[in-house]
Length: 176
Image (cartoon, rainbow, N blue to C red; front, top):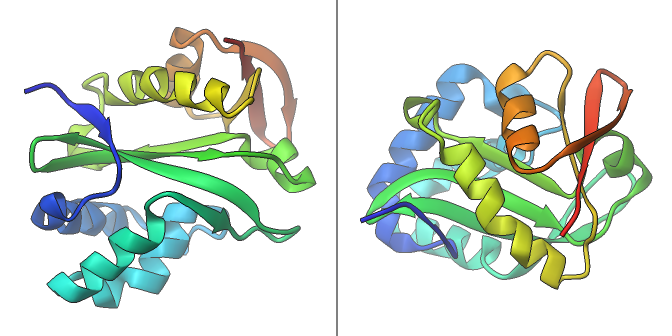
């Protein structure tokens, strides 16, 4: 089986929990700008039960509000899975607030630490771009930290054209 984009699903519960522990060990839960960090802070105590995880999956599936300092934006979340193995996640913000325009962009992604450097981020981004374009997002704005060489390479491999640097973020546009 090959990894694929999936709607959030309860079938990857055990693997998801292991991935979240990997992200916590890296300190992602302390990041004030990370949606994954916010979810780790909010949901970590409830994920371990089947009921709590089912509630979480229902909440993040479909289009939900991404709460930002300058207002909520609609967002779709997809998981990168291989059978019952959770490998990562990618989110598409349907529009941008001023802070997202400068800092976050339309798309954010995270690959679990033990699955990195295997091409998953590039494959995930390539897979989600047509969905973003169907939402009318063209070009897509994708950002990464100016020292994050791995993300820069992922964005460029997916057709990202460098636009500028703002607040220690490199900003790229990817057209349909």
